[in-house]
Image 1: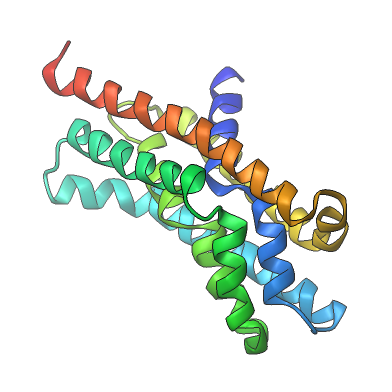
Image 2: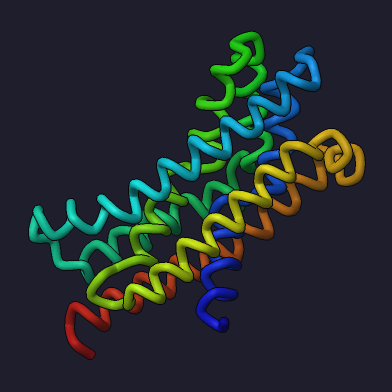
Length: 206
């Protein structure tokens, strides 16, 4: 249960379901309620499929390329840390992705793929995170199953957030979503730094 909660918090921070609400509103502006629901469900299914594929295939790719997982953990931690810095000091997730979503609002159901599923929900950070959290050499099948369940729970929350996006946006506003995204970035940075330190310890067997 402790591992499940830890993975859930980590993935919730990376995926940031709350930050998806303003992106969803911008991407579905002017659409009917039925179309919005279809887009929300489709985006959630595409995101889940992509991340599940990364859980299964990501490890095999690393093993095929004969990459030391400690090195991958360090590289992944650095990349995640850069994403965190962008969330804190750059344009936050809602600000950046809302601008992109507004450009593609007329694409109807295509908005479920871009920018909602990719990169708002299953972005590079989320892909990197699920691969790091399901390393065969570090985690048992049961632990990987718990991580996958935590991921699916976060995606379910992302779906509920999209379905209730209008109410959430009225409640917290664009500024509120931006603040939450930056706080998530702080947590994200700490987790990324921990990943780098763990990778260094593993590589040098400290």
